[in-house]
Length: 350
Ligand SMILES: Cc1cc2nc3c(=O)[nH]c(=O)nc-3n(C[C@H](O)[C@H](O)[C@H](O)COP(=O)(O)O)c2cc1C
Image (tube, rainbow, N blue to C red; front, side, top):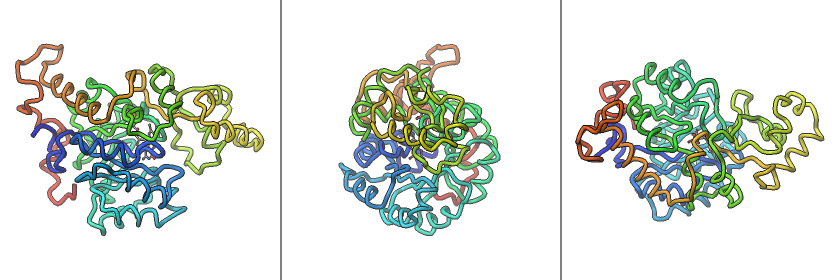
C-alpha cells in the first residue's frame, strides 16, 4: 500500500488529511475525503456548537470507517460540552487549535483517541509533544484561515521534524502535487490541506465565496485581524487570518490598532462581514489559491494530488524519471520518515 509509515498505521491509502475548516469542512467533505483513502475532518470554527457538530455528524455520508474532528480552543472554553460531544462521536483524531493550554490532551486520551495540534516552530512542537500530542501539524504562514505566521511552511516543517519524533503533517499553501511531493520528500508523514478542498462541491463554502476563490490569484491573499476585531471574536493577536484581500481588508490595512479603538468602525466591519459578499466579507484562503481553477469532487482532488505527487517523487532531482512505475509504492514507504518517527514512537497512539 503506498503512503508513509504514519498513513499505513492509520490505515489510509492517501497521506492527506482535510483540515478542520469551520463553516467549510462539514460531514460531506469529511466523508468524501475518507472514502477516497485520506482522512476527512469535520471543523467547528468560531461559530462551532454542539448542535452544529451533531448536524454535521449526520452528514457523514457514506459513513466513513474513520474521520476526525477539529475544534477551536476559545470556542471550547465558551462551550466545554463541545469537546464531550466530539469525543462521544468516536473520531479517529481530535484537534483543538490555537492554545497552549494542553489540558484537552488528557481528556482526548482518556477517551482513547489520538490528539493532533497545529504548531508553528520547533519549541512549540517540543511543548506539544511533551504534553502528549500524538500527531503534530507544522503549519506555515502561507496557510488559509487563522495561524501564527512567523515561519513559512518549509521552514516550520524542517524545524518541527528536527525537534520531535512524533509524526508531523505539513500544512500551509499546499494545493498542488508539487507542493505535496515537496512536503513528503522533506519528511512529512502527510499533508493537512485546507484551501484546495474548500472549493470542492462537498464543502459548505457558500457559492459567492467559492467563485471568488476560483477567480483568485496566488498573490490575492492577505494576513489580517480586521474581521476578528470587527466581529469582536476573541482570537488571540498571535493568530491573524489569511483571507482573500478585498475592500474591507484594504480599507483597514495597517490601521488595525485604530480599528480596535473605534466601536462604530468595528460595527461597520461586522456588518460588511455579515453580507457574505466576498468584496467585503472574509473568505479564508491560503497562498495555494491561485492553483484552483474549478470545483472538482474531493475524491478526484486527493486521488490526483497523491498520484501525481508519487510520480514526481520517483524522479531524480532536476526532473529525470527513474523508470519506477508511478504510484507503485515501491519507494514510497520511505517518505514521511524524515524525523525517524517510525523508529521512535512505540507506544504512540496514532
Ligand atoms: C476556510 C478555512 C477555515 C479554517 N478553519 C479552521 C478551523 O476551524 N480550525 C482550525 O484548526 N484550522 C482552521 N483553518 C486552518 C487549517 O487548519 C489549515 O491550517 C490551513 O487550511 C492550511 O493551509 P491551506 O489552507 O493553505 O491548505 C481553516 C482554514 C481555511 C482555509
